[in-house]
Image 1 (tube, rainbow, N blue to C red):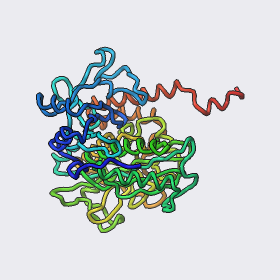
Image 2: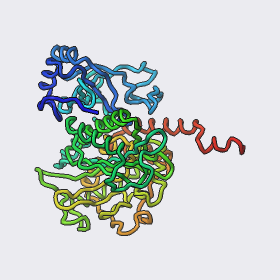
Image 3: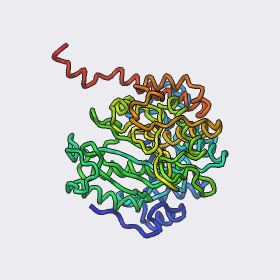
Image 4: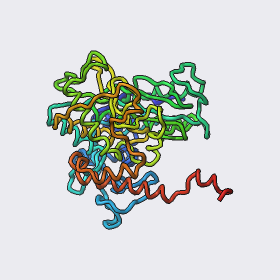
Length: 453
């Protein structure tokens, strides 16, 4: 399989002017204008490039169209759910405006003649919609900016490759480099395509579960990291299908398997790292200590943003699975929710809470809100966990299920203070809809009892 060849000016992130030129020259025919939904999936339209730029020339250069506002209220099945303040049957599911963020434009080399640009959802007056994932993250980045900090982040993403209904690799292949041919071909094709789409991956590795792969990304601006990850996930799923495979980003795709989405965060000021330590086991800097304390204090209140579906909590139920069970932290301790990792300028907080299917914008927004809280209040950092992170009785246990997490979220003064009541109401409604759906569904466990009942 080959990828499309583009001129140098169309590799990586590209300017609006270069995209316009590529459209007029026929290199690009279609532009995908995408908005991340509540699950972090890219939703939008395939716009004819020439017509799109004609409209932009006649307008404000930003508005690329409209879309039904139910994009920001629909569940995993894209069902129109009632009960949201943003939109519902009470207003006929009105349109929202779609404004392009031209700093995100890129080509997709695995899909010839196609470019993609991330967009922001706005209301009829052009104001940002506060519950839209990108706007939630932008608000928290601005809050940290007001305090004098620039956050940088990078993701570690796990997913499982299936051939039919079986994992592509049928054993624990952790750190293996003798890849089966189909896996080697897939990874080679993926590694060749991603740089032209402006996505840098530091490394791929096999993980501990059968068919499980981990991708590690370098640090960048947090919004850019989230945008890149949503495109990465889109590309992985597309290219897997082209190889006759399925890529699953479920947090717990089968019993006993846990796939995570870890966020590595650090704070900077005037391009100077504020988390820099000689080793992960050194005492945290004041800035890092306040950040850890804020995360430990806020995590129990914000769990539906880290884990917004019922499946995600099955990942926490597995002891010694490298998924946390307490709101704890420790130096280079993979059993904790917050791991201090790296040294020097690479020192960072690895936030290990989210499952693989989490919305990256929500995870980042919740994490930054918690860190800002710790910095604002100069919270004292609790003692670290220096042993088994799964026996951390001095720390608050994570919720056992989404219902418990939702109760804490809805009744939390801290959640409302950090995120705003509209956000808590909106994502609380989404979590309740997820719980209601699961209550209606007959599970595999119940179906196995057909002949017993």
